[in-house]
Image 1 (cartoon, rainbow, N blue to C red):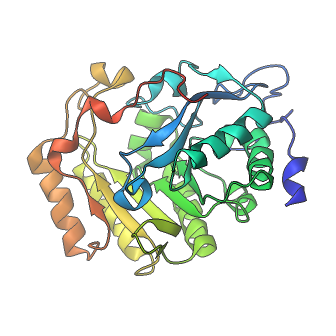
Image 2 (tube, helix red, strand yellow; image 1 turned 180 degrees about the horizontal axis):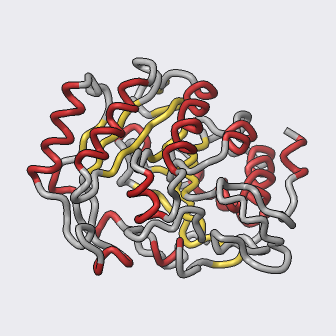
Length: 303
């Protein structure tokens, strides 16, 4: 674990697949993260999958910035506009402990990769201070294999997106035409590291992988391709989570077909294909889940 302290503020940042090479001691990287850790919210969160939120909530920390920058991001105020408060690793460690004191089932780190030089020592310090919660790594799935491997001693649960297979869609919507090439390698490594899902006596996940897919309007065929990929993974090695909560946020409001919600017909087709492929041991949102309330208020609570 002492190796975790050796991460420093990158002077040639390659933490994410963008490998932008920014000297973050002088300027922010492509992800908009610079030399000072920024956090937008730290609070109990009840809107994750039931095995993550449980009965008491997930101790969720929303970090500012993002390596993907999707045009429909529901958290765009923090991912693209830099909303957040600057804190240090010591304060972050105390936040982790405070979330445990509030009854959280886990520590849920949302878009954390750009801040690993602060997060890793904070996690170690929190352990020394008595924090025993499992760590959930909540990511858009755009992670290097090196980063996933680095996190093997730290992360208990991977909560990762598989957004696209189509390079055309990932290029248009997330400016990442290599998204699936990167994501599928990372997902396989996450599964290899975490092992099959494991739960406590109350059904709350202790270890494992959840792979999420948000069905997008006008993209049913690509959703089918994502489901084909999920079905190719070893049976029982992860939990699939299919989501219908897409809502036109950020730049998507002016871009067809993203300027509308997914129709019941589109989502039913995705669900039916998942069932045909045997992807039944997981989660499927109801169509009515597409609501703005799934975006928490970024009011610096808990920071």
